[in-house]
Length: 236
Image (cartoon, rainbow, N blue to C red):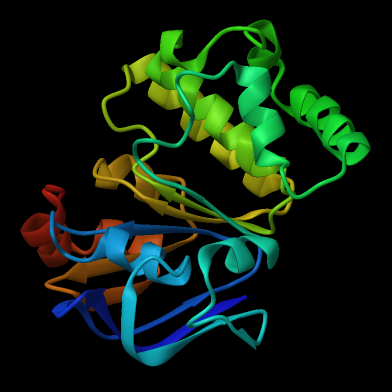
């Protein structure tokens, strides 16, 4: 579904990614792990057209999206949830959902809000509340609901449970799995490597802007050397 070949990318003259090759299969959960500064976020930002790509290709469903602006990448069926700033705190939940449907007609926006609230019943409870007054977990649910307004085929999550309480983190991860079960392909960046790998089908381990491992998430969890050196996972 997503194929990245020979990707060299960064910000201005500062290169972060070096010859990255990655494939993501349709309907899978792929977790990207690695030390801080390894290029995890830069990789998914490159997919969304938020970095400077020096060379290489990014294909989504066999279409070259390498240099597409972000709004056109979104129209192709990819949603992106950054770690912070993924909702508008001074707007109500309903206004955030309406904003997410800005390219749609009023009738279609209303219809999708109704469908989204069926998928996210918790969000319905605080529809008239400003997002700035919500908890971190509630804001993440709103951000996911906004992403679903665009009916994406793939969602990219950048550390969605960072700074959340254990209970809120578990609820967010559960919802991500539910979305995947409905057919949405998921790419997940998470610092809590062990937990994230346990729910993933495939894994990508990055270090110093390069791919150190790609393959089964279970195999990465079971790999004592890689787990210990890069992820802090203790062997048996």
